[in-house]
Length: 212
Ligand SMILES: O=P(O)(O)OC[C@H]1O[C@H](OP(=O)(O)OP(=O)(O)O)[C@H](O)[C@@H]1O
Ligand SMILES: O=C(O)c1cc(=O)[nH]c(=O)[nH]1
Image 1 (tube, rainbow, N blue to C red):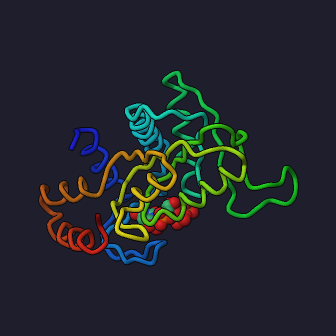
Image 2: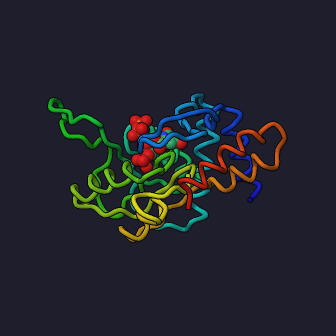
């Protein structure tokens, strides 16, 4: 695990973004841990988070034209990532969607720059891959193509079959998925640090059941 990854895990635990307990996921699975990016909820958190996203993206060397944040939590993530990239001299257009279509004013369900060219999806986590597939449908419907996905945490879970949801997305759409941290690193952190052993056991057994 790189130092920046350990620091990111500690940042997420400190801000209660990475929590332990019983959580029902969008996929219906019951998970002993949850990553709630909505709790990065101060200006300082966002500043720190935006730098971690932008650094992961720059490290990946991924080629893209525009950032796209899926509603809802992807919206501030794409926004602050675009700002951090611009601060490093790499200004890109960005857009996001509304969950409900707006039928007055400017109408439609895409806000921001037109979805054109290679679109990078920015979100918090991938579990079963539903949110990413929905985003790819929106991107293709606009006549653009997905370039890749940038997330904070790869939960390393099976999707519909034996592959991880991320592997399915990568092979089905031929795009890379870049994450700041993966579950295996969270688990190593829990196992190596006192006070987390009970959580480590539960997370390990969840990973046995749903992990890849
Ligand atoms: O890979 P999946 O199984 O789709 O799960 C992950 C998605 O679920 C959550 O979003 P949610 O749809 O709950 O919406 P929110 O951003 O409005 O909280 C999360 O922010 C991801 O987008
Ligand atoms: O699968 C989900 O619904 C999910 C998992 C997680 O860790 N965080 C989140 O916001 N959603």
